[in-house]
Image 1 (cartoon, one colour):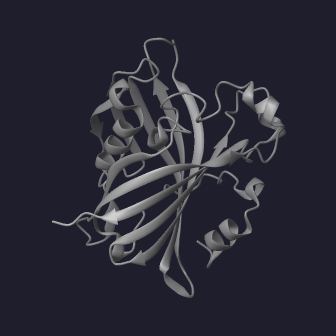
Image 2: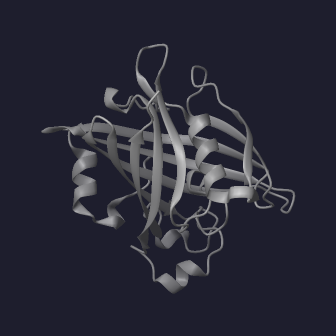
Image 3: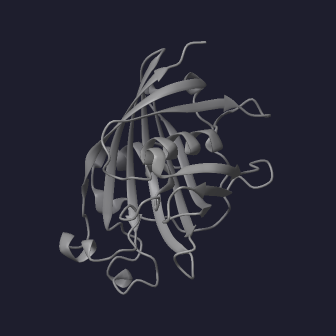
Length: 242
């Protein structure tokens, strides 16, 4: 990652510039700062949305935009829901790097967003073999029975003059399968995360999720790599004490 690229990009708040990356070398796992290691209670609130490239009315007519269907963004399975509480975890891997416990975190947030309407029953993820492929099996919702995640891009950086700020992005292709449809439903989106350590036991997390049209969508060539909608979530993290 170019120095301060993510920080500059996010600070500018020019949402149309949150473009999809060009695929090249498969990305490795993100190494997080040591102060994120441990278990956290997350209190999440929906902070709004913008339509940076096309008129809102045009985008709202497209049912295949990520976030418009339940579970079409696995982390935020019910976009727009207020006051969602769950748990998150970061731990050390075999290389002594702090990494996200993705199966735990996805299961926790998915369950909290959908309550009794859906739950991840199994996550198949072997980051040592392939950190960019994950399968989640789901019950309780007709919109998703299996979700395949393919990560095609990652970036991260620590603020050059502030060690308590950490930035990370992850571009995903999510394919959602259900017995209600003959083919999988494709969604392309990218999370831009800003972590701000407020104290040893509190962190503020902002997540911007930029959503892109699939190449088969008739409006695709009006946007190409630019997002059609961006969702914002504010998450307060409090360390869970042993």
